[in-house]
Length: 423
Image 1 (tube, helix red, strand yellow):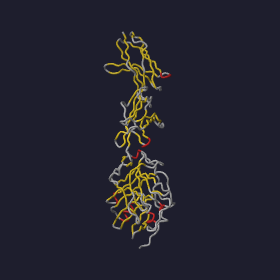
Image 2 (image 1 turned 60 degrees about the vertical axis):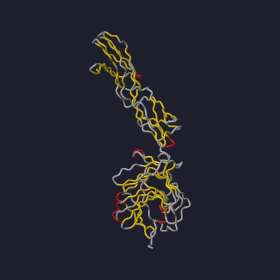
Image 3 (image 1 turned 90 degrees about the horizontal axis):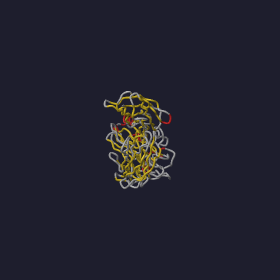
Image 4 (image 1 turned 180 degrees about the vertical axis):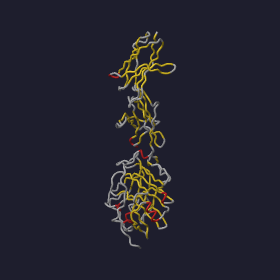
């Protein structure tokens, strides 16, 4: 057997910690199973027999999974089990990137080779079988989002006489240049027994005293060149909330009912408390109210905003949100006429108010068969009231109304049409 260099002094190169991904990364695909082309990994290091499991289940209570309440559980029955999720490739050159959120509750060890969870890109070339490795956890707490690509640096080891021999730190591209291309798999695995290989003593490896038996994964994405794979959100049950209403624009002061349909695994989810939240511009979201879903999974709340507002339904136990509804609110404009019977040369006085109050010009119009004709305009007075005067010289029936332009908060407003007779 060849002599082996222990990896005690070799630092496994980890990519910088990423923030937990936001919806901007792309819409997730919630799933209760492991979807193709991903595959469950259930093997074992020497000294053990495959007995672990990879299941979608409810996530840990504290800390909660970053998305929803479910996650992929990598459960070990024996310390030599290797359990995880992966994707096979025909050639290493197909590999593009891997992304996932991970929570490994084990908290032991101070060196990389004490880790219990790994990214293992296994590949067989004409020069042998290699493991391109990243240590994923050796004492962190909470969920961590990770992303690795062909340009990340990995520790490379080669299988040799039943053990592993380090080849140094390389990128995937540099590895292919040096050792060639070939088939294999990208795997995120719970495998604390890898520590035995990395210390050069797989047969005598002993698990740390604080070793647990589970690692949690969520929001997994393994892509090959030229693909656009989705992020998979593992959920024991897939819960979704819809948003619906009868109009997308109202007038300030009007009341509109917003509804949601809550489903679990595509069936109505009854008796659940849902929340309606609103936000305007850069302001923080505000809780509007709560409602309980009926037998059909439906619930609704009536709103009466005075400015453009965005709304969304939330179901906190599953940490989900409905699509956002942008509700445009037109300025409310009232109109009265001092006198509706005038003589030629008399002055029409139009009065009214707008709500909400803003600094705008109020325009008086006449409706004709050939189109609307502007009569006059004036600035809004204090308190939201206005008064516009216009001398009417010609006889006839005038159909008049007033408008105010759109503002940053409100859509343009228009009054009802009033009639005045000049005879």
